[in-house]
Length: 217
Image 1 (tube, rainbow, N blue to C red):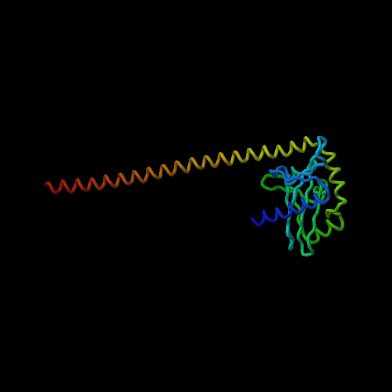
Image 2: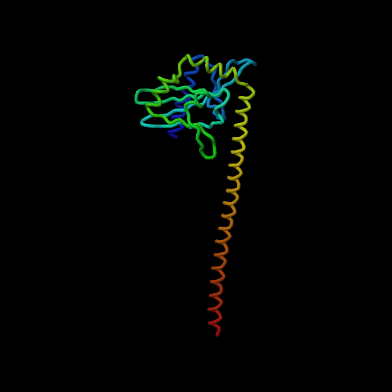
């Protein structure tokens, strides 16, 4: 719950910041293909879309950020909201920046990008590489979105939805199968108890008959 709370803080801050910059930002009812937020270039039929992923981290001595490498393509922008001992800072990474600063790794059979974060890392990202988000980043983000294919971006998000739907169906099938097995075990347990009671009744009846026979001798 605490992690989810921090994620919401980061996402809300990023959304508010982009809205202040005059960007058209929307919160989708799904989080697919890295789309915590969606940015539009306009609201007419020429609109193009970009995917925004938001991360929040509290830096004490060391922390890290890991993202699915499949997200890092097309109009994708990563915002990292960091809380450090010196205050709070918002970093911005385009795909080319992620490929430069992050390390490729594997996690649970997935290809990922990972960034290890220390105070030195933050200082370098801000002072040396100018990754702090400012108004000067807006044209670069819009340029990235305009150069992308809106159809392809939508397909990416829909592909994520389809994949997630399949995962949900698989989970539901497993749940239903587990429910069926649980029900069958409950029935077996009831039948076992009934058989035990019947056996006890028969044994009691047998003892009664034996005592009755002994009394007749």
